[in-house]
Image (cartoon, rainbow, N blue to C red; front, top):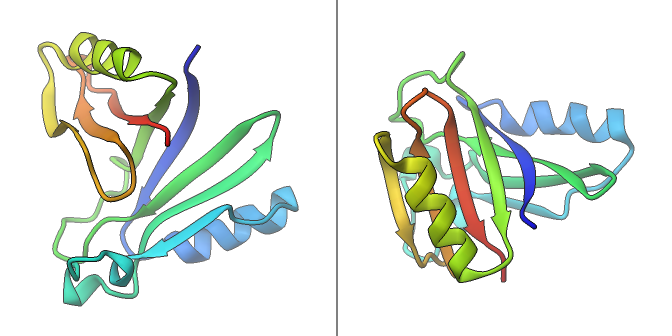
Length: 135
């Protein structure tokens, strides 16, 4: 069965926030990437922002997050996604097709440099989702 992890977006304060979370939970980051780590370059004005960070908090649950690019509007109040890690390609496709129906797709389900499949969308009820097929 799929696992669910909260995904938090920030407008330039992800590193500060996640350092607080790290100290609170007493764990270490399993992933910490900046926009400057993107192989194709990334946005110059966002190079030092956090692209993605993963922090285990116990019981197999992780808090995931990062900063939006500097060119995006402030995401305060719009910064939370439910992040689902699918176990199979079929499960990822089913979750994407079912949950995104009637909603707004921000990024369709596709291969990325960091995962075999990934997507982002807002469902028809306003909940924001990310689905990732784990490596």
